[in-house]
Image 1 (cartoon, helix red, strand yellow):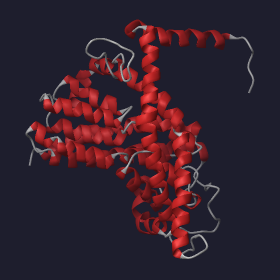
Image 2: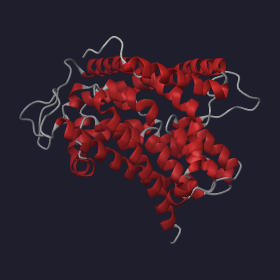
Image 3: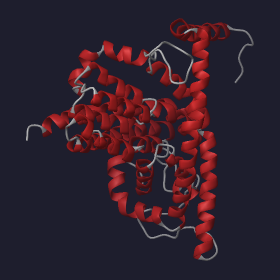
Image 4: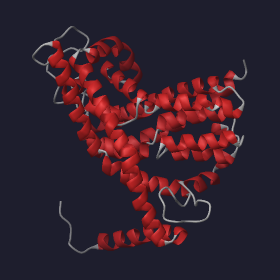
Length: 383
């Protein structure tokens, strides 16, 4: 495509670009805002991206082993009857649930990069893998952390966490199904991924590809090849995480005590302020004990780890109860920083054109997860 060298777009973009920095500069001071952007991006690179890269390398090795020694084939065969009607995905997609539940959203990228794994998917199913994986991302960490808050609040949060986990599963179904519906309109329901072998029936016995050599050689080759794939994935998520997460965090976090200094993770608290305007809607939907509680799921949009820290402070100050923990568990797990990772993940798997639909689907899924957790908790309280 080509456009006029000088046109309306030039001036509209320039006005928006200046207005963007002016908005942050008016609240924080222009130099503080710029320094915060740079420092936040640097902090995310060192503390988050390299951590995710290390995780991608390890999970890449694990996923490669799963492929080499038939675990993906086994899961596909066993779980095909469940995954197909619930998520409209092949049974192999369940491996993505496990890997992301034990680690974080980008862990599924190393699976998605595996040709044998991709061969199980139709074209319209593949983009939904991002939504499915993100809904379970950091699941183990979120559940364990929320359970650990029981001692601080003087209340047992075991039931609340379990209900939150159920809510997250319901949210994952809604998010994935919506995404599947969108991608089916985009690609149709008949085309397979290029790696699929024509004439292969997933529900019948079939051969699977393996490396040549003895078991020891296959093991070493698998972990090294998987690790290399993890390094590649780690580099490819850098732009999305740094750019999107920096923006979301600056819109979520507020001014620190003592005023703005240009340090990392300062912000203008715009998103919590907007959420406070619709508290009359949020209260019946999620049953939050206090207005401050909305900050946790809002923060989870950009970084689930940051939202957990916020939840701890609310428990310590006794501003939330067990119902809030159930909702937090569901939404923090289902959303798990998807605004920070979805863009880069969709780009990495080659489905950039579906990024907007993926974000819409997952927004709805996270809301459903929180609402379901609240009303399941209310229902459980009746017995």
